[in-house]
Image: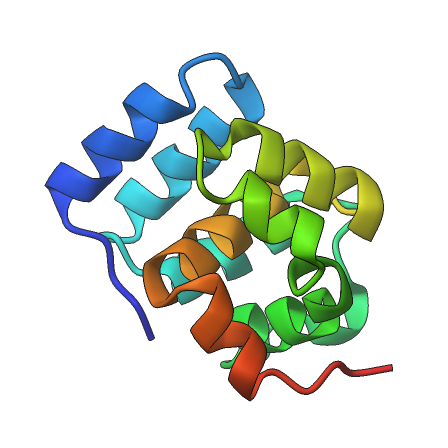
Length: 126
């Protein structure tokens, strides 16, 4: 699973400074020593609207990201990923009907591995 360095967390903090929910997600990522998987699970537990069926799964972030791949792999979403990630997070949260705090590690995960690479390997779950 992907891990963010303290420098990367600081970089994302500056990018997401206008989104209190995204900053809370970054706090969780920091609390989990940069581990995106552990942070996504922590956020899911703290978020009542999270996918109950996936909670506690050791591949929670991967499965959630694949579940949202129909949205992530749209051309319009790829364009959102090229700028400040706040818009991509808000769009994913709204389109995927998940909290912004949970959309944050998903978008960061996809940003780290690259949208095109993710979409080449992702098989959407129904």
